[in-house]
Image (tube, rainbow, N blue to C red; front, side):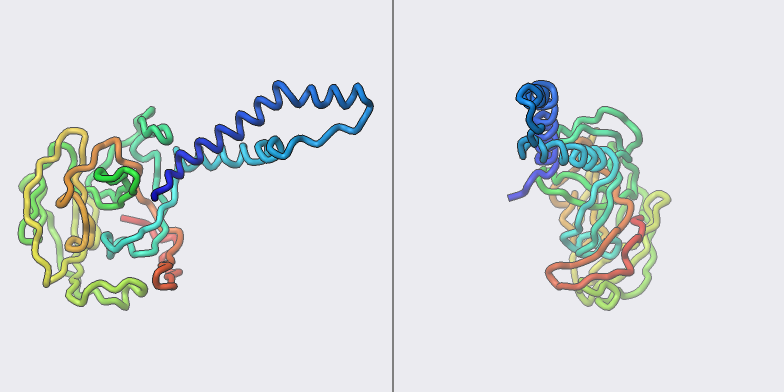
Length: 266
């Protein structure tokens, strides 16, 4: 079962804030007045009041930072190899595409728009409780064609240049198939690496991106569950742009890669 951490954080922040506020306005002064009248030591606040007063500021700061500025995510699969590896912990810029209310995900302030080539985090359209990360390929109105492992945007071939084999030594914890070939691709002005597998077929098709939606693909082109399979990402599902890696550790293999810490995402 997927836990909606944003909802939990909002509930806890609201609860602790209300407990602290109600006690401050209605009950704390009464406790003090009774102690003064009886000429006794001021009583300690109830445990729930103490915890609420201590936790509320912390929870509020975390909520504001996570909802409107930056949020951490973990990469669970290899669909974005070689850009992102299994076990990468990434930071996502939440305000890059506008400020949204937590939980409701309603945009209240427009700041910027998604651009081709961005690495984006979004709520999976098939199951919005699951977060996905892919590269944005198509904007609203674009015609995307994928044929014989060649990518076309609005009829124009997206250039790529072979860079050689991609071996398991280069990814340490993650082991792609031995037939992986590395290419340098350029989408708009964004240069990035992609993987193609020689023994995999091409998932050919053509898609016209509707208004208010986006077309995304994984950089591990033959090992990615993306818009070629399930369609488009609604604008309201967009969560932010991935900007950097702050840690790498693959729990399933029990190893990590310290060299990836601080690496930017392009």
